[in-house]
Amino acid sequence: MGSPMLFGIAEVGYFVAMMVYIGYFMFKNKSVGITATALAAGAFLSQTAALILRWVESYGMGIGRAPLTNLYESLIFFVWCLMLGYLIIEFKYKNRTFGAFVTPLAGLALGFIDLTGISKEIEPLVPALQSNWLLAHVTMSFIAYAAFALAFATGMLYLVLSTEKRSESSYIFWTVAGSVFFIVLAAMGADYIKFKVIGTSQELIKGFLFKATFRNESGFIALLSFVAAFALMFFVWRYGYVLKRMVQTFNITLDFLEDLNYKVIAVGFPIFTLGGLIFGAIWADQAWGVYWSWDPKETWSLISWLVYAFYLHARFLRGWRGNKIAVLSSIGFITVIFTYLGVNLFLSGLHSYGEA
Image 1 (cartoon, rainbow, N blue to C red):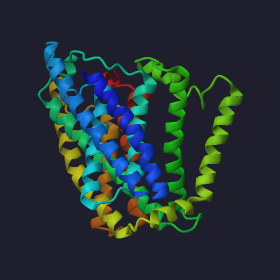
Image 2 (tube, rainbow, N blue to C red):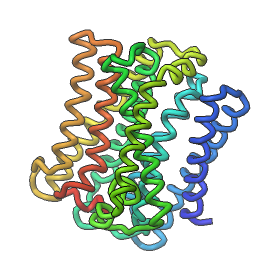
Image 3 (spheres, rainbow, N blue to C red):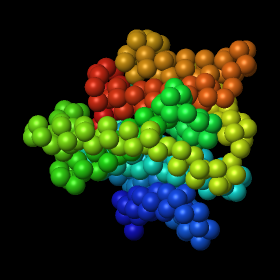
Image 4 (cartoon, rainbow, N blue to C red):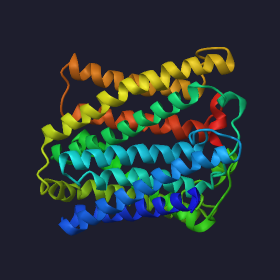
């Protein structure tokens, strides 16, 4: 059994676990929750074995590198870090509620892989990646990204529980942000169903992403997609209190969510500072002869860092608590997503090799 098959088993396991976690969240059935945990843990073990085997396979091909150097491998590693962090939280706090909020993020990453037909081949490193700083920079960056994703989930859950009125800005924020995530996941699923494997280049990804829905050649279908998206956002905004009532049945306190939100950011921020920025700058100097070049990915990494730095500053020095701090942690992860994927899709620069 090779690494592709193990990755396939893990991918199917995560998607099924996502649906079962959502089912557990809706129906609060203990056996369903146990099933969801078992599926997630099994998929995680399969992915762990696949990562190790892919590393071994690279040595067998005479390449010998860590499986972290292209877009496919980095997305897979992000999902692995995200699910590791989630499973630790679930077993530590004995609460499966977060699964319904975390596993869709993993599903979004895996869906992006299938939609775009990203190359899964083990290939030699390009010259810019041939550095001893590679493993530390990429590994630490994605551990931090996973921590920020968990903070996003806890922040959104906090907003669900804390907001009361539809007119509140925090209520509007979580209903719109949550809806957009599921709309994007559904649109990518429609793209995959229509186009299957599309291609590996940045141009092809730009050309086909959301082409089955929002960018469809048929103006009627595109209009219908936008109408459906806005209808879903309105529906979530109108009936968001139902989700709040469901969350309340799990007896999760706002203090617990706020504390967990802070803890994961407190872990992720220094790791991102050291691995993402400092080690990245050292690596850039070795590869391109300059520590900082205002490359789009460097610039957006700095923006993400500033958002989380402001989060910590606002929490400790300005005493921010509650909805403001939860919204800030959610905005931080949105900048992280654009740093990682948006830059590769819509901008160009020295990090363009990451698209492969």
